[in-house]
Length: 430
Ligand code: S3P
Image 1 (cartoon, helix red, strand yellow):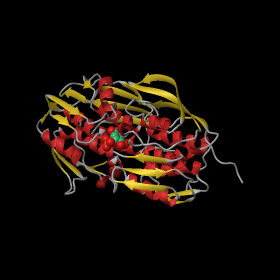
Image 2: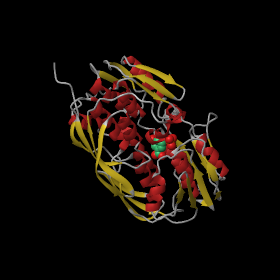
Image 3: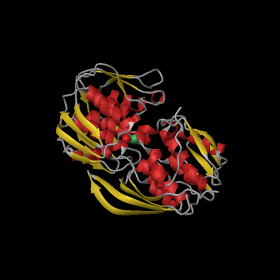
Image 4: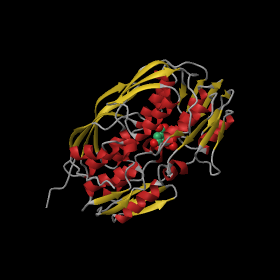
């Protein structure tokens, strides 16, 4: 019998997806040339890049993560000649809805089958309060049809859900609005928009849960170094934790405090994770993360960590499946409206692999055990596909993952990188 796979060595996962989107958006409406390095060349960030090209912005690259954006200033975007296709990307659609709501031209935003199912009223309603005119389907979903608006008005908005996309959408609309726009969040969410606006020289006023800006200012082009994506690193943090003998270092990963829920939760489960070479790049904290295999135990996941780990739960559920005892997640109903219903799709897959997983309306209960071999459906969700691939490190036999082409949206080269660290993944093209 061949030796069990484990993860070893050093690797760098691709650039942060959230920051890559924002680098193009802010670079496009800034004055001067913004130079970006570490840009994620995945389909989601490329959808944003292409949308701005279609609105007259000259963008060079991406070439090995290097991108140059010739900013057109706050009022320089041009009408696109056809609907803008956001593909699978909720971030592109929700943030662009805000950025385009105050333009003098109409625009239509469309997306793929998954994006067309996702709720958009969370952005169109507050944008409506600002004076925007945006149509959705009867179900409140894409396509979004944005009509020109003479002048948006700033609002003071209390978000009902903890969503960085909603917050960012409103702040981007606020750039084009008269007066002050303030957003209060029920719990802290990723603050890349606020940090990047500051890097572009735009004044943003922040207190613990509230952020305000005044419309009509100017953004000055800058240099941005995008860190490796902690959401992509998460698969390897879990993989190395569950595969005995593993010792892996992930280089240059963004460790923004609003994104480190996955580290906090894994440490709570007993993971051996060290942060090395800590520094700041492009206004974001960065570190090398060393992770060694450890015995994990199930825990009740602290609710305050949920927004800080919102994209990492598919990977964390695999950690829970390999842990001793029960892991209970609550307060995470948002997972039902991600690229797929991540609670149901993960529960179905775990059950198929012999793990007791009970979906709850706002979370899941997982009893750790031995992951078995089997065939699971990723339902076109990139993070679910990668989570089940990594589960192979803790499984008693091979796992086949179906419907996983969308891994390209956030992590191009995932299979090759995983193989280079020690997890053999055989890609089967249809
Ligand atoms: C994102 C915010 C989160 C996250 C998504 C990226 C962002 O969505 O799940 O992958 O870049 O602002 P919500 O704001 O819907 O929680």
